[in-house]
Length: 404
Image (tube, rainbow, N blue to C red):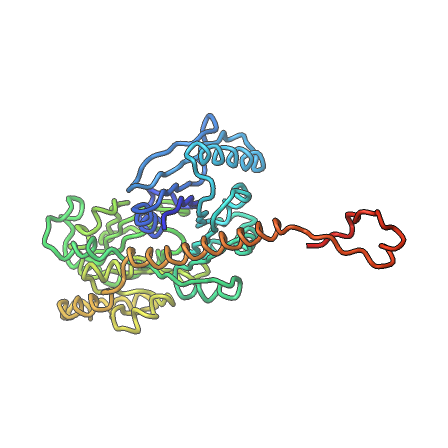
């Protein structure tokens, strides 16, 4: 079944190609998709629409002198006009951020989806009111999807239809890292062995662990790829054997990963990482890399349980694990990783979600039809009593005497 899907995201489409991008790129193959980003400041109120992978990315622009209440009013008006202009009447409303509910509540919908990919309230700088809006969203949603097992466990008692869809992987894309290719120019001069990370560098990234690891093994080269968020760029780890090469486009990642010996996930253990299910875990494995991670629950289960990821809590543990992984049989590791990921793809993830959405839309439609039919039932008058007939033979039934 084809739907109009209108998404509300706290992540910009062009920031890092991750869960929202993968899902909506697949959705757009058979649905019309509008991906509405958070507003940017500008001189006037308006919307900019661009095409990305078949998805219409909508960037609202608001004057910076608008207050929160006025911003919500303007946003609501802009989006309603956009939907009207495009002939979209009852879309599937898809939320990655509860904050959008403050201005999108009231839009007609064929169903409402909350895709909870992170526990946003635990992140640094989380906006006030987020938890209250999330509860409103949970009350409103027909479906709740979660990005991992920990999130599933935290939400399943708060909604009757919660479904776990953990991070998936584009196996063909990252599998290209196994094919010999020229090193990117900014990595080509870095000696081996190379220990690499790609992803957002923010409060979830254990900077001290990386510094300690680099100091413990100065003969290893640590390559870091990714943008910085919510921390100052000067706080990114630096040193003679640490190479931060900045953000890289999604198409370029396999070429970088091809030149690494081990992939690392040095996540800090804090509130912001308690519920994460890192997308890079299966991406590293699809690239053929051995992996070391701090003990993130959704990495320990199932990846470490399957013997595909080594777990270490500190720099000393990372050194021990990496030393071992540099000597393993890579062909055997790749074989086992491929078997584990054989049925894991964003296409399959989207297919599972789409089936649930079709059911939710049908249930809403069925409920609406039943309500309309109930309202159209022809009322019949209550027969007047025998006494009333005998004393008021010509009286008509009064309004209060009607029932359905």
